[in-house]
Length: 198
Image 1 (cartoon, rainbow, N blue to C red):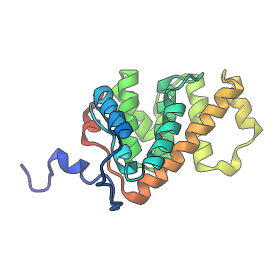
Image 2: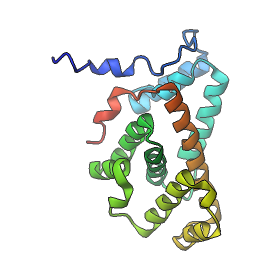
Image 3: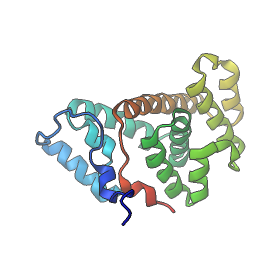
Image 4: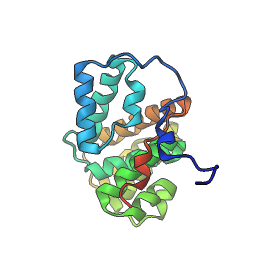
């Protein structure tokens, strides 16, 4: 193997560039949650390992994530992942582009769509609904001060309900927060994400 190439496992360790003393034993609840991640995803996402130094913060993060990304919504799971990738593309968040780009590839069954979301969603062949949603996500991330009634009306015209607009805005807000924490801590995605959905 070339000296310039590292083993895949090296990309998982450490998950972040901060030493937060996360070596303490996990609670039974967190152990069970991590076991469920292993069962459903085949891994424990490094973002969860990063938060594990403080179980209260981990629960707050996972509760909000699960509500926004997995709970009932007028948005499909794929649409929510597409928003996550577009926000992360604006912010150039390596962790989220890798992890959520993989989710788009898997949910859509279309590896090219996952790549387009990461690189430039405007080059993708999207429905008018998807285009309106992602244009809003991009603007709310890049120019939040410029968002106004015309932007909300554009979402309504694309078929989104008032609650859907709330959900879109909440997902955008959550991933802007998550992107900034990932950037500040040099959070690294699990190596397994790179090969998923290809």
